[in-house]
Image: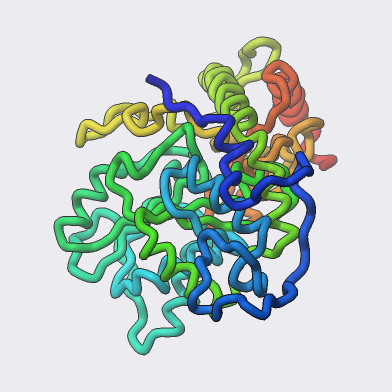
Length: 394
């Protein structure tokens, strides 16, 4: 059965903390401090998960509390929100205190965050590959689907491997939020989302999320966040609260459109130079990366076992020259040449601009909520302009 998000959780999952209010749409609340009650409890006695009153927004604030309650229902755990995805990444490192981190590729920002965390230690945190041998004290960091290609990694395999030595597994599931993927089903200990991306979905906020399994874990994260000062701003929390009301409509549509577009692009990539496919010349596009295109690996893993609710809406393509790759994002009309992903507008990026270690012929594409035929037509005319030599004028 295909996993499904309950709309009532997105719309009414905060009922226990917002009370009986007259307003239908959540109000913007940006106050950092709140009037004291002469009979209120001391700070250390406040229930920070279900506060009856707010004291200071570094601890709790109405909109951020409501967001965490709703996200907890759709992400299947206790949710702590942060000022950005990288703030959530750093918080996970502080919580687990790893001696070594097993990681491979993926978002370059996470690697830099590990470097920053390592500066806080007397002994640098060692980086090892995902397929190296693990030791006690290791943290396994699996990003899946992986940035920028959108290809999947086997969560269950790495969960079993790290748990054999008593280590923990963090899964960065930014590219596949529910209902596409549920990492806890495959052995994850903690789930990270850059909520800036699909959960926020409107390219207008920065946010990060950590999901843990127990309240005691959440309380430690909440305490650490308070004194690291990495909580979300109240306005960003309100924007996220607004955004998640339509999350289930956006992600399913984006996934379906991206999967169909990938299938069309694969046909174009297999078209040789001198021939055409649906009026688009071959020889410009050479390869498409996406979880849906992966085959069963040597261990018997196929992404469909893990991506049970659909495929990621972000993928990558290779062009035949770096000149084409640099030019393509500036030849489209509907796909916006910009970094990031997960928004309602489709984005297209020459990835080496952000990550100089990336393949210079690679372009990352994030599909929004536009119609499939419009995106095919837009990319088709951009490929034609590449073939015609229009790149020289870009």
